[in-house]
Length: 448
Ligand code: GLU
Image: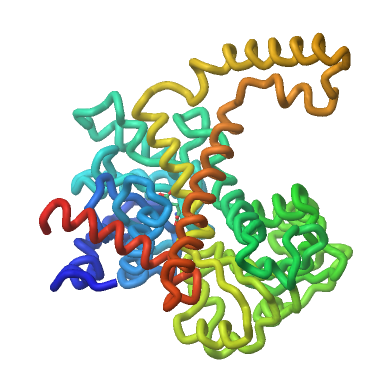
């Protein structure tokens, strides 16, 4: 793909990165905090992307992640530019009330520069943040006296359901990971995973057991019958060749503070080794740079689904390809979060829950269809699917259906790109090709 002179440079660089330093009086003294919000691209507005709370964050990292958001949104075709934010903080160092005060101060700083606003920049959860922080941010934004108060709830996504959130947002990234793997396995243009096209009893290794890793593991094991043989975390990994009970591991982690010591699994403090356990699918769901040139040749998976942002270092990628491992890239695999954020944002702006107008009508129609079928055939409608068939579609059903549809659309586009461009050999390049073409077209159309 050849871009007109100068356009590649325009797209490559972040448009702006704001560094904010603010003080909050806590525990009888003043504490200073540093944060960033970077806007990579405003070819479509608002710009969208999470805010992470992490001590190791840097401005460069935030800029790279903002660029990835532009590409992600363009690939799955949701109408957002790319942005990202971070606050350099270890959330575990502060109690809930302190975190609330810090988050509210941070929000005030962002609001001053339109870096939180329904039409300009819409943050969301990321590492170390969740619906609690989003609720504080939305509330604080409203207190800044925005002129568009009626739409103020759309200033962040990932809010709790009771504060203008949407059903299924918390689980969305994990659900998207599941749908992404389904897309690949359904595609007969590929060999599946070692010739297999379903997930039953497939061996899966998950790195990172936070929101994304936990939900992906839960759905793949509970819905698809896959075996989660290994879960790796910061302090080590647990392994059971016949599969771990994901829900029990989560309970153990919540009560003891670690996955290690989980009964019915071997525990090891060597996190790196966990990634190297032989499996069908490896899902890095923690941080960037989990797989580097140093450990890439020891990966014994057949498919890697990048649930985290940037888990494979650029130098590691050719090593992985050489070993015949297929990589499904982050901008596709973990797009579920921003896709459902898009639904939440639309819900906030339309001020009407999804499905409200049609649900009862659809239920009535389905009930008529079952009655007619029963009369015509003289048989009862099968009990096991009756309830599901009659149901008019809850918000959660609609969110899942929409997410599935967007994921399938993006996969189909990548597949098509691989077919149309024999020089493109991998999914990441195909995804970049699609995303960059869309961003370039948007820039060309507005003449910059
Ligand atoms: N933080 C998530 C991501 O990296 C979600 C972003 C959003 O919903 O705006 O994709």
